[in-house]
Length: 392
Image (cartoon, rainbow, N blue to C red):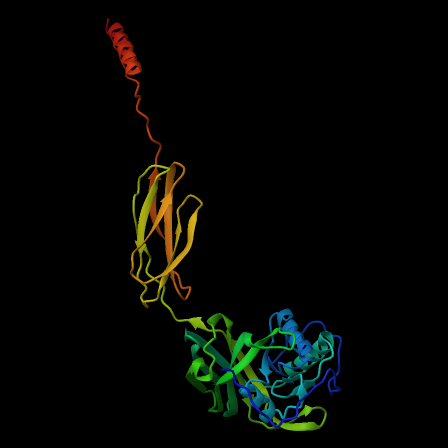
């Protein structure tokens, strides 16, 4: 079930709006001196006509910027947690709006992709030069199953004084399967829900850490897949700054700026299957079909796939999935003579694989015995006569 909201906010969609920023003709980002990775939060809606320009500009900047010195999150108004972030935290005014680094820079409106791309470049460069606290985020994510993930996060305070702030861990869908723009293009880095949103108080040179078991089913996000999930962990400072969602001086909000940012994608905590065993004829005749049996055991009990290379430039492709420990079989015919090396490997349903096992087989040439008795006797008699002459 999708989550929608009813809100008293009056939201407008703008194709362009005057902001306090300067539009520069910038084509690339200079990220060598950035103090941290910048966060861009795009406020948008499925009914917004001009939001496609803002969304495309962020996507293009992200793909062109290597190494990437910023991350963007798409806050889709039809999703309740996103609407709360926009309305409550940012006093949102219009679609589209991009909040950089928690509101340090705000860009409203979009008349074309290139025009806002230049503005976003400028905002990212400005934020990249900000002074930030000396803290480090570390995050890792394990995929469990069916939208369930385990998140391990820590924040190291490298300062000699205590640090206060707030950490938010955003769960994103890389390519949204439920929210699209007005032109049916899927939104990217679509915010679903917070895995964590809590205040921090870390002593001097100390480390705060936590582990979170997040279950998408609780929020009707059980459609999530490992390959399409991204996690963003961001630490915001506790210093209140004056921000405006409609620059230069309208729709005020309390802005708390980004200190550090890390991203992670889920990995599978899975053991590989044991190397498979294969049995069958090791010597035969080319042109005849032979059956080979094989099996393996997965330590985690996962279903398994098999790949067999027959050594004659043919293979089976991935066969399966099969239950761990169950014996399987495959037939093969070698259509030429020679020595061949069968190689077989296995992987589990999490794409965690093992090494190859090998089996050598021979398909030798067949020696044909002379079957013509008359010819055989003639040769025998000639050999006997030659032998008698030789002996005298």
